[in-house]
Image (cartoon, rainbow, N blue to C red):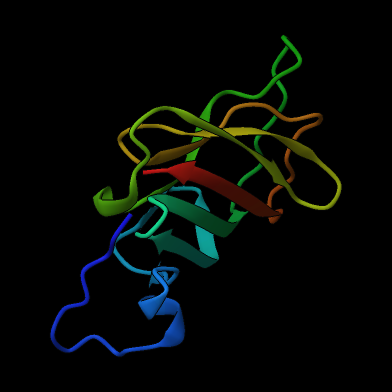
Length: 132
């Protein structure tokens, strides 16, 4: 995919070869019940892909229900400029627990499953990679 180089852009070997990236670190929302440690999205226009790293702490416990799973819990919302065009699944972990999360087409990042209850104060890490 050809990438246009515009006035004001810094010329680098990577950009000239079409393999540069843009980091996104603003425009997000942290859901109630979570605090942000850090996050970053790396967009690669030349390949049309996005990688997202999210690191949050939950401020209240998320308990396993009687059906042996957690209630779907939104922890973060991506900026609209980098939402996936379709529902995207990813994993999350906190060092002692793990499960599935999804990124919905509106940008909501939702924790969907866990192996045990998620204790208050857990540092939850998520990673996703998808095509834009």
